[in-house]
Amino acid sequence: MSGGFFDYNQYKIAQMADDIEFLIQDNDSTKKNDYGEDIGNHYPKEIIEKYKEAVIALRIAEKMVQRVDYLESGDDGEASFLERWKEELG
Image (tube, rainbow, N blue to C red; front, top):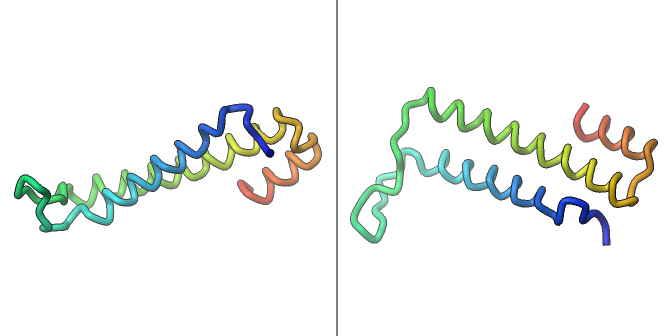
């Protein structure tokens, strides 16, 4: 099994990004929840843009943690760590 140094918590970072994307998607929704309230938050565009920035940052953080995880777990060597970092993160 690959990785594990961080107990696979990098996937929690991915889940946070997914959750924020869901909030972005539903921001303008007028669908109702079980209490009859709109599920959308109806935040202004400026806030949604910041949410989008957060998603980008979280996706990058997830990749960074994954690369460190593989190196620390012995699944990658130093050369492959650097090569994969460059491929995935620039």
